[in-house]
Each structure stands twice: as structure tokens, then as C-alpha cells.
Length: 155
Image: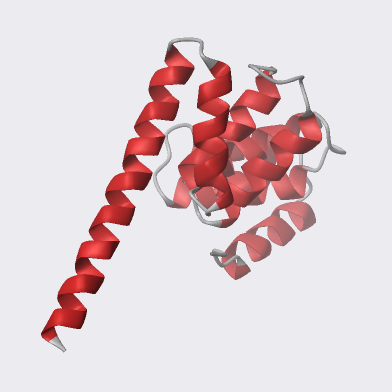
């Protein structure tokens, strides 16, 4: 039994170290302007469920960095990261819905996203939420708050 647990821990460590190395390689490539390598590293991790890599893919598609500008694809990756509870992805998704970039403008969804990010202490999210609330009816705010309370992360 001890051998099994030891083997399992070693495998978890190696897998985690490998994922971290891939993320670091992707980040370094991105900052060097090597978007093809960054995309390859981030996509591999993102497809395995890494929220940070999913967020970075969203940024690359949203900015047309190394790929054609593609708002639906950006939204797909931002949503995957946000659904896992990544606060910066929730905040970014809130901005997408508030502005209606690539999606119909939806203040209720924006408020919900900002509220979720703010609940994790993400800088600026509470201010974003309050700014969007000024454009909403009390019923819309209540709906957004209800959605935020009911929200649960997906893995």
C-alpha cells in the first residue's frame, strides 16, 4: 500500500511539474513574441483543463495575437476559465458582456461575472460591478445577484 501511495505521489508531482514547465514555456514564448509556441503550449494545457492557459488562449484570440482575431473562440476559452472560478477570467467575461463585444450586450450576465470576481477579491471587479449596476434596473440587479449566489465552479 505504501508503495502504491508513493508511486501515486511521484506521478502527481511529475505531472504537475510538467504542466508548470509547459505553462512557463508558453508564457516565455508569448512575451518573446513567439505566438506559435505560446499557442501550442497554452492549447495543450487548456485542453487538459488548465484555467490559466484557457484564459491566455482567450487573450490571444481576443487580441489576434498569432491567430486571426476570433471573438467567439476567445469567448469560449474565457468562459471555460471563468467556469472553473478563475477571477480574472470572470472579470474579463464581465467586460465582454458589458460591452457586447462578440456577444449581445447583457448587463445581468456582466454583473454576475463581476460579482463573482469581486467575491474573490479581484482588483477592480467591485468597481466594474457597481458601474454596470448604475445602468440596470433593481430587478436586473436582483437577478444578477441570484445568479451569482447560485453559481458553482465546473471542473
